[in-house]
Length: 188
Image (cartoon, rainbow, N blue to C red):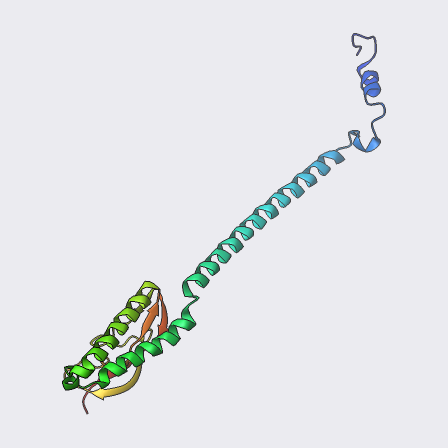
């Protein structure tokens, strides 16, 4: 078939493709179709790998952000445990003062000062997400209470906390220190 220049289409195509390296020329044997399919499969695999890498990067970022948030929220855990011993000692000091001496002129100011210090300490602990665990009158919760002794009691259901030897505390949603408690059991 002739074109407008008087050349056949094959001659015009050959002239246009003159100088193009052989590897880029279509040989017409069907091998290019196989190569194309293989390249498309490789491209799809590469796309999947990129998607997986992005997802993994996002997961690592989320874990890191959570770890940072936890570190900020619970960084004071060790310090808080140490301060709780101070709170325990303040409570013991108040309990050691007999009721008749609390009204004595010389001790009244001291007792009032210790009580004010204890209230301020509880306020500061609360501001930092540290709260006291309720225990007396509740069923024993092994996630928050540590049973130290069992006492026979006809007045309480077995497994109920009847007294607290040491207060327990939470920091945010984690146990800081379990409450040391006495638990009721059936009388013998």
